[in-house]
Image 1 (cartoon, rainbow, N blue to C red):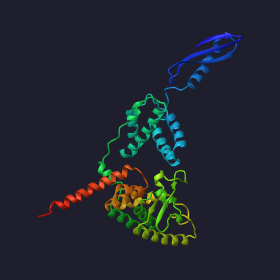
Image 2: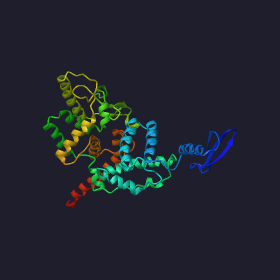
Image 3: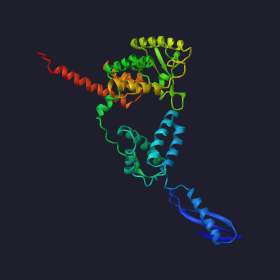
Length: 365
C-alpha cells in the first residue's frame, strides 16, 4: 500500500491481479487528513474490503450452487429446477458449503458421498447432478478445476441387466401387485395401476388430466403436474404432448374406473372435473401413489418399484407384442429415452434366449 497527500487529504492505493484477465489492477481510498498511523490502518481495512469484492479463484461450492440454481430457475422448467435444488442442497451441505473449488478434489467428494446414507445407485445420481453443475461452472468461467467433472461412477451390487430388469414389471408381477390392492380394498390404486400399465402415462400426466381429456378414443396429454411446486405446467418435452390411443383393454379399464370413481365421489358428496381425484375431489398427490405401490411391490415381489416403473412396464409389454421402438417411443411421448432403449434390448435378449431354448431339442428332419 502506498499513499499520496494532497490538499489536506490522503489517497491510499494497493495493487492486485485480476484473475479473469491476468492484468494488474489497483484499488484506492481517500481519507481526510494526513498520512497518520490511524488513517493507514483504516485505509488498509477499506482496501481489503474492496479487493475482497473482486472476483477471485476461491469460489466456494455453496457459492457455485447458488449461481447454478439461479441460472436454472430462469432456463429450465420449475419442476426440474426444484428437483435439482433439493438434491444439490443436501449433497453440497454434506460435502461442505464453504469448500473452496480450487482446493476441492475428487477423492474428497467421493469420501463425503460415501458418508451419506443410501446405495451407490443413489450416490451415482448425486454424482451426475454434481458433474452437471461443475461443468456449467467451468463453461461460465466460475472455476478452473477441471478434475471436478471427472468424478467416476461408483460400482453397484447389481449387473446392468439386473438394474434394467428392476425398472419394469413382468406380467405376473403386475397381477401380484393388483392382488395386493384387491386384498386390502385399495381400489383407487388397483384401478390407476391398471390404467398406467395399459397407457404408459407418466404419473404427473395422469394427475393433471381432466375428465374431458379422456374421450372414447384418446387420452389427450397436454399438461403435467409438478408436485414440488404444486402447479399444473406444460408437458415434460414438446414430444410429450400427444394423443394416447385407447385400445380395447385400456377402454375397459377406464370404464371400470369411472364407475368406481362415480360411486366413491357420491359417497363423499364430492364433485370434480379431474380424472384421477381423491375421494373428496381434491387433486391426487402422486407421492401417496408411490408410497402404496412401493408397499405393495415389497410385500408381493420383494422389491420396491415406483409409478415410473409402470410406464416402463407398458413399453416392455408392447415390445413383447412386436411393436417397434419408434412406435413405442411415439406412444410414450419422447424422441429419445435411454431407459426405453435398454428395456427394448433387454426384452430382445430374453426373446433370443427363449428362441434358443425352443430350438435346442427341435428335430427338423
